[in-house]
Length: 490
Image 1 (cartoon, rainbow, N blue to C red):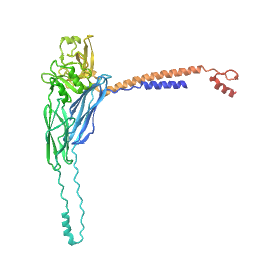
Image 2: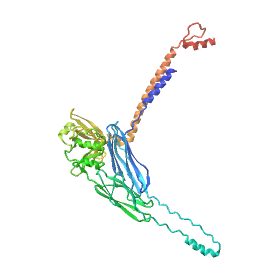
Image 3: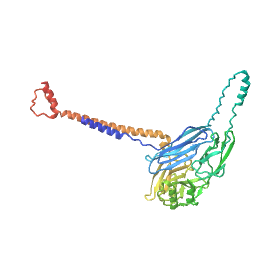
């Protein structure tokens, strides 16, 4: 009995240890705080992610990016946007992009849609004041009573003419009041969308023109109208100036004080000094260092997050890109692809992202592999297994400089691109089946050992012949019950 208990305990322990604990794969989702609201209210749209790198975009009624990376492993995070349109209607926000898993190095392509319906707030009807009928006492008083009833009629209440604004703000930014009806604000080039919130002084007045607004480079003028209860309108004007890209020669220290996030245009051979990286580190702000081609389009871009910088060694920013240079082809055995070399041969600031234009060679939604050439060992090795081309660009974490080679990866090999959910399910099922088979084999072995042990114990029991037993002989403890039973029968 004791042996059975021990074996059962071993079986339970092995089964509990073998049950797979499936890790959460990289993922992202979009949600709304509510799916219906009145015009004048706001709805929060939240993008959540769990990954080591994420390159996500929201489009539709809101257009923005959710981009980031963490070299230490998968992290969970979210970013929120405010939707507050100034007119009734159905507003749709879509989620797209890709996220990478730290443990498996696989890339998933989440998608999702949320829809919010905005309607005009209904106006409560003015309640009628009931009148008490007068019962005439006699015919002589009828005319008097009628005259009195006419005199007691309540005059109609005058509607409010108050069309003043109580509060007008741009969410997350400091709006400057110029005068009673004019406001102004300057924002960085990286700010592409803002949200205006306005409240009327009179609760019976209505406000229109607030909500989410897209910003173009230069002056953007918006009109917010307050309509009084009696229909009188009053306009308030907001001028928001979105700055053009900032040249690197501008004093970075002063610019960091003014802007939340910076877009800085690089000149060829520009070097980001240690002092500048220290300023970015102290500011804990995100700075985009970009190099433009002749058409003023971004050729490549470094995304440096000041909150994650540790190493502040100077950074050479120039990148050479080619598809036919012989010296590059020698490094990668004359493979066909796209080559690029960073002038910076040392390490990059922690969690630096490189956004590189490859749209002239690779199509959107195609997969590429990135290889790294080690100048010491004179060997190349894979640097990133799968990176997806989106809007002509690839974006990935770059930790050190060298020669790199980009090679197209067949879509059929990009498992997550076909059906991320199915791949996850299949992998989970395969793990479960393997563990189940292992458990079954272990249980069979334990059962076999248990049966063998019991057979051996039975074989070792002493053979007793039914007959007269000499109780004076020494009897083993294990035979007492058998011997007593036979004596009682006799």
